[in-house]
Amino acid sequence: MHTPAGFVPAHAMPAVIPGTTLAFAYSDAKLLVRGSEAAPMVPTLAELAAAGVDGVRHYLGELAGVPCVAIVLTNDAGAPAGFRFSGLRALFFRIPEPLVALGARAFQVVEWDRTHRYCGRCGTATRDKGGERAKECPACGYVAYPRVSPAMMALVTRGRNLLLARSHRFPHGMYSALAGFVEPGETIEDCVRREVKEEVGVDVGTLTYFASQSWAFPHSLMIAYTAEYAGGELVPDGTEIADVRWFAADALPDMPPSLSIARRLIDATAARLRAT
Ligand SMILES: [Zn+2]
Image 1: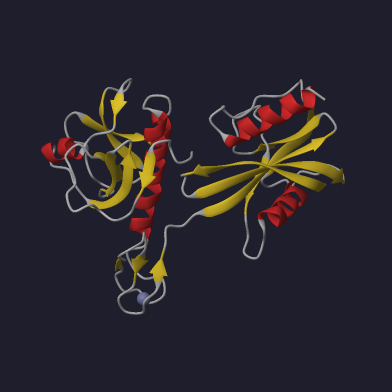
Image 2 (image 1 turned 90 degrees about the vertical axis):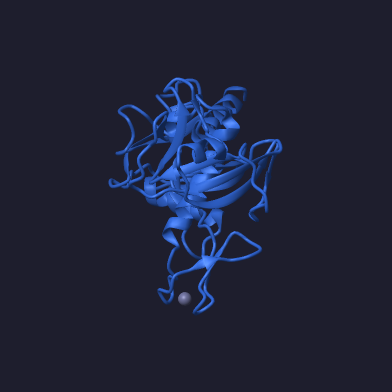
């Protein structure tokens, strides 16, 4: 996910917020939508008000001139008549892609609100800080921003072959690129070299940046690279990685869906290697 075209982000709530404002209201990890299963819609503030639904609001900005807010509902909130709660992933391809992206953005803001109600340093109740998306502690001054966790993805190449691995968590038969979270003190490139070595036992040489993707489950920023094999034998780590193999660029296994940066990385790299 990414910033949709035509979206202007902002954090200061306007003095007047119209009823046409799009409202991304979350209870736990579920978004409140109206309409049928096949044709869900993101409700407006006026529609939520008519249904008696509201909660703590955070302003997100404007999408093509339409204001957008994130709303924090209680985790046991029930859906009013004509509405239902839906996981965001179930809405992919059912609501317009810009709204999926804003739904993911809203979820991260809601999750940050819910997990930063008290100061992590002294335990005092926090308050929203003026001028930026942050919460501050009135007692000790500690400031907490929404958390974004950088993670690397690496597709290791060797000639016309790609290194793909199976996690124990994957559906049967599915392989993907390697991934892992950045640790304190590391650059993203350090992280690629460490994770590849830890997960499958090989060393990599030249790294080439591919793309990045925001991933709201719960707050990752995935930064993807291709990495040239430089040495070592394949040894899966046995805990995270169930199997790892070299695949020819024209004979690839089952892979993640095209929505994922993993699939885009693999498809683009395989196409490049097939053309060499
Ligand atoms: Zn404090």
